[in-house]
Figure 1 (spheres, helix red, strand yellow):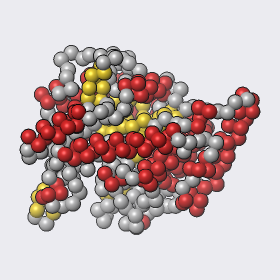
Figure 2 (cartoon, protein in one colour; figure 1 turned 120 degrees about the vertical axis):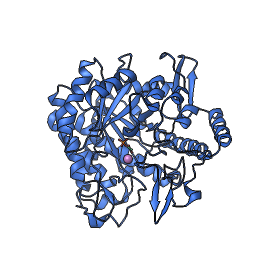
Figure 3 (spheres, helix red, strand yellow; figure 1 turned 45 degrees about the vertical axis):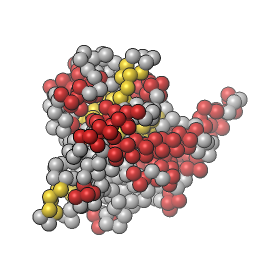
Figure 4 (cartoon, protein in one colour; figure 1 turned 90 degrees about the vertical axis):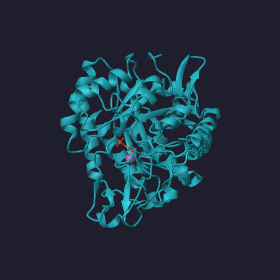
Length: 447
Ligand code: PEP
Ligand code: CO
């Protein structure tokens, strides 16, 4: 265990991006309630993911991490959850086909409720209020009551995460993901998509491979009838994370039991800050978002603090550098990690470095920038003698219009039609599948 660390030792440091709660008493009551509720995940599952992330770092697996920028409490309903599972499954199928290696599926769900914001205040028509910080803190409406940070929302967030996870586990084990029936996974609108034919070809190819395997082996590929999903969220709201951090009696280690794979966001990744302090002491595999502003020596300090034991699978770098900056920013990071003797898992988040605002004030991202950053990441890692180990996407299983481009050529003018995100723009169902297909082609061509 790290020296002088406790689940609460982050409180001695500066914690950015935290809401201000009015009543300490109410806060303490909510946190007590949270701390007495059972874990959402187990140390056994967390350990499995860590081993799989180490295998990804060694090039034997590929990671697909995806989901909403911010989950909403109201998204905790069957349609929204199943659609997210379906798109992640379909993408993973396509990536397995191209990359010829198993895909580790990690959702940004069952707890992705807290959001960092660019400003501590929001002013509209002369009225100034705290910003919306995600459903686990407050509400998006612009009123004093809606924007009040309510500690009981942490308990509600935990409950929503538990219900989401319960449904997810049942679906993943219940034949929904049976690879013998990829046609079950069709969503209505894929039938009318320009990509439908290519997707059907891939699905048919997988069916043929299974038939071949089964006739050669003489057994049904039983273990393929269910799939694993792991959960992840940004570990932003530290009192919540602390309340779900407990000692695992078997290993003597502290785990964050609210999720398998928490990550540190780009806005809270300062080497001396409270988030890094909290994360250094938990035994989960952890993610670290790295933006183009992070200097190599700062990066070095972060990886030394967060992976002191040089433990493969422990630390995943989620680089989100931007299509225009990745060629300059990524090589020094890779070299720094090598010089520091670390085996890291490298995942490209091609979303967060490519956000722009339209002349009408709508936040969007272009499909070409997203694909461009991803393809560059793939090539740069190879050129540096390693490999890109995964991709991190903000997506939804629904037919929204939040990012431009893709096979249907969405433009700025289309954005108003079905823009639902309260925060960052997500790839819609078809755009997500298209990214997976194009990446898969690239993996296949690279051999
Ligand atoms: C996010 O993943 O939604 C996010 C806020 O990303 P970043 O920390 O990379 O800006
Ligand atoms: Co986001």
